[in-house]
Image (cartoon, rainbow over all chains, first blue to last red; front, side):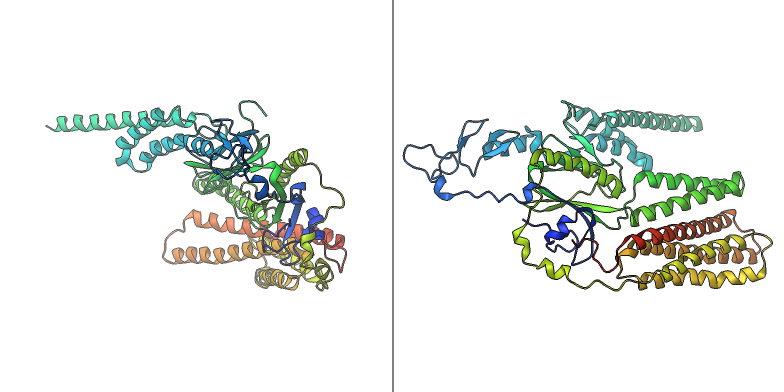
Length: 193
Length: 322
């Protein structure tokens, strides 16, 4: 329940926090603009072990058999205690379903990382421009990645598929140019003979 | 907010060299996205759990990709202008490049910040917000949304735990001695004079007296800002003026050293009986541009800052003290 200076980590006195836009850290003189919200004053939630203890005839937690069930998972129906219940978007989940959804990408809210295959395809397609011997594998790989991951969900934020299209077009152009180059070499060799 | 995409973007979406950080406001949470070109990582902050937002003014030397592109275009114009369209186009290219450099330096030194969110678990930086104006705009929207969800703090709120460091003791600490504005004013005038002389020296009919005078004036234009920085180092009122002087010292130093080196090259090439490349002369012009733009800009901004900030701050008082 205190605000800290983001430069020196000193605990800021109330009168500094109250200064808002004109706050200066008394310890390191950092110029700060501070906004505080009611969550700062809210006491930390404490679980009373006595309240969680199970009594005869009561349902127990699926994961802690000695604890009283406080809710049921909205996905699988398992009973869970107050410690295990995870609330996401107003729905109660059990830890097993959360882990399952996180690994299987069934709940976008739990995702913390996504690979941008469209950017990779574009990068692979443009790489041969800088390093021409990689033209054949690079352009083939770009086409493969674009087709393979076309329907794979990309970024969480809005993103059009122009990178996939550009990667395919660049890769096809490179293949055509490579074909013409090989054709010209063959013609030259034949002409010499 | 649409049903398909329930986020609203906060702050700029400017790609930087090394990645892109964006901030998105959802119905009940804030989504911080870090894009490293091939992978995106996400951090979510529940709006009910944000305890405080802290914006700290500091130097942030971020390099936006658009700025780099603009510099590259100006550089190409400057180089190609030497060969094709005469020195005017080249001069304009170097001038634009100088302005871009000065703008970036001033934006990085004066208008930059870092923003942090504090929750019960820890403090997190929001790297997407690094320019103060856009950060304040974004934080205002975020603040309004948090207030909608959490409500407003009572007027007489207090934090009993923070009484340990004795805020009264800190408040009662004697403020530092306020420095006189004389040295910063003289430094600004010296910068103006040096810019004027540097312009006069380049004219074809320059008086020898002015040429010899320009050397000590340049020396003074570098030394006086340094003295002003040292003399006002403990005074918060001169914070922005000090930054301006740092910019000026670096720009003038770079321009003069660069000018000396390039002139040395030109003389060496001419002594060898070869014509000196036009790009050398054009680069010298750029250095003059940089010198003059920096000096005039810093001199003018410094005087304005001295006139406003120094008078507005009440002497003998910590600015955030109640």
